[in-house]
Image 1 (cartoon, rainbow, N blue to C red):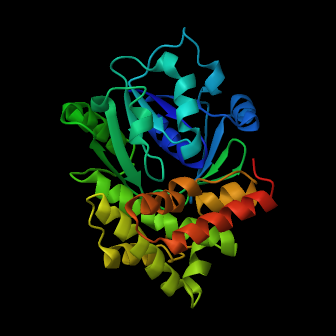
Image 2 (cartoon, rainbow, N blue to C red):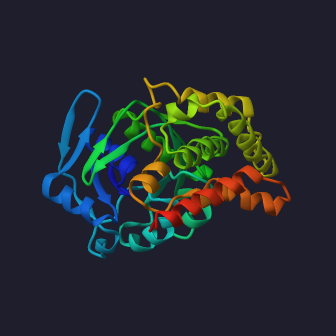
Amino acid sequence: MKIAIAGAGAMGSRIGLMLHQAGNEVILIDRWPEHIKTIREKGLIGTFEDHEIVAHLPIFSPEEIVADHATVDLVVALTKSMQLEAMFQDIKPIIGEKTFVFCLLNGLGHEETLAKFVPRENIIFGTTTWTAGLAGPGHAKLVGTGSIELENLAPKGKAFTLEVLEVFQQAQLNPIYSSNVRYSIWKKACINGTLNGLCTILDCNIADLGSLQVTKGLLQAIVAEFAAVAQAEGIELNQHQVIQAIEATYDIKTQGLHYPSMYQDLILNHRKTEIDYINGAVWQKGQNYQIATPYCAFLTQLVHGKEELLQAN
């Protein structure tokens, strides 16, 4: 399958590498000039737990995607939420009538953006528990294992979605076909709505967060706000199940030593975060539904304050 990874940061690099190793034709698309330059000169380095590989994958900036590029079968969307529309505007030359988009972005509200570029029946939504980090430009650190849950947005897209599932299975990405991906998206957003913002503000990894006495109460308050807003949109989040899933990430043998993507963006790289599409989205939706979300509102404002202090761009 010919696959474009739109947003070849830490997670995009991991998924792109694994799809490439399984024999797919993969191209990477990213906006970070140093990342592009390093991969072109040295290849993409992937440091797994027990080995390292170097893959010489083609990589482009979005502006370099021009009309003479061939269309792709699948675009895996892994940009930051605020970059999604601009990315797809730039890569329209590789999006044909039969091209599908597989959205693996964190957060809420991406369906409306993608529907501007492909028909709804060509959209696949999913969530993933895989983690990754960047040790530097062109160097992905790939720790732990995970899975990917996916579902076609419209019934007509099921046949191709099952083809994608097979391709991801061959790449050992552990895909699972879902019958209710909207629940999983909300659940994942809720997990991110605790781990990402709290680790960023407290300047700690996931295991450190789990060790704090105040964490349990913070989790319960934030998860309750997500659940209240999700219920207004027809999604019944199981709060106990979500909290169990969050607490399972504390284990240092799995994800505990990982610093969430928001921490990597803001604390390490002084880049703006996706907070408006996670806690900020719940805060905004809560206002629309007249549901109080004080913890999500406060955490959103704290992260924006940290962005300002660090002059994030």
